[in-house]
Length: 168
Image 1: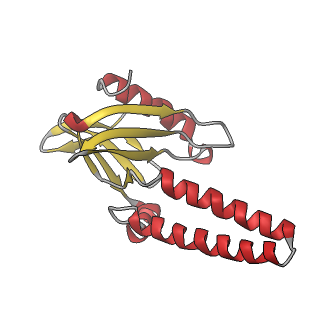
Image 2: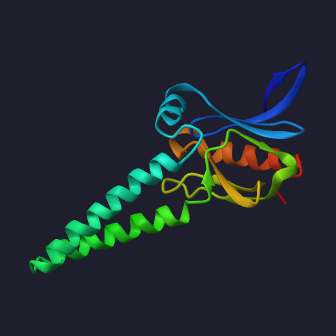
C-alpha cells in the first residue's frame, strides 16, 4: 500500500486517473499530479461549471442544426444530431450536482459507491456523496484505466476505503 507522510503521519493513498487520493483522519484529499493532472486543473479547475457550459452550448448547437436538417427532409442526419444533443444535454443535467472538490471533510461524507471496472471497457470509479452547505454533492474519483493496472488499483482502493470505514 502506498502511503504519504504529512506532519510525520502516514496516510494510505491510491492512484487516480489524474493524480492520487489520500485518506486522512479528518478529510479525503484528491490531488492532481503529472500531465493529466495539469490538464485537468487547466480545463476544469475546482468546478465543473465551465465544462458543463461548454457541453450545454454544443448540445444546443446540435439540437438547432439537427432541427434544421429535419425540416429540410434530411431525416437520418437530423435524427442523429437531435439524439446526440439529447444525450449531451441529459449528461449535463445529471452532472449538475457533481463537483471537482480536491478536499472533502470525512464528517460530510454521506456514502461512497464503488463502480467496478469492466476489463477493456470501463475504468473503475467511486462516487462520493457528501453534504456541502444545504445540498448533497457528488465527487467522482476516477481510477486509472486497464492499461495502467487500473483493476489492481481499484482493488487496492476498495481495501483502503473499507479499512478506513468509508465503504461497506
